Length: 204
Image (cartoon, rainbow, N blue to C red; front, side, top):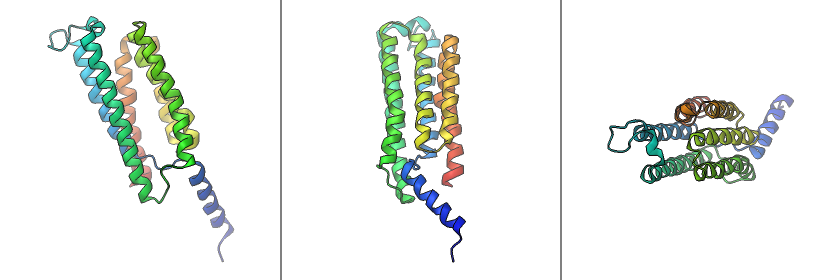
């Protein structure tokens, strides 16, 4: 005879699988962080090394050539991060017999990407107005809000990642000179730490 406690635990697990997107890959978080750190390193080199062949100091950020390179780096990092997350999460869902594209995953995507897309559009408005120093803060804040919002539909652990991004974004807003550093810490270092923790906690 099965114990009522075990049956309740199984029912709870089934309900959680149906209402939450549980196929997020920790390894994809690590790789996304590495992509971001490489991108931040390139941006730092272009902007802050006047003697380099790629730029002429901070003022070079207003150069159309440097600006185009920054957009390309941002686009490549974004595509690689999303693509890696999608592929590895889909692979994980097949291993755990969870459906990847489900009502739960759709709710997760909606909760995450509405703030993220809004933040991207806001960042473009800052570019249009020449407020480059606030772009890092804006992307961190909106991404943090997206993660906090999406944590209701997936692993609760990403809520802490969201708060970390939000705090770094606010620091970057008050201290714009440290914007690139905060961006590297948020999208790079925190992603690597979070991804490694999730991998060892749920996927090993």
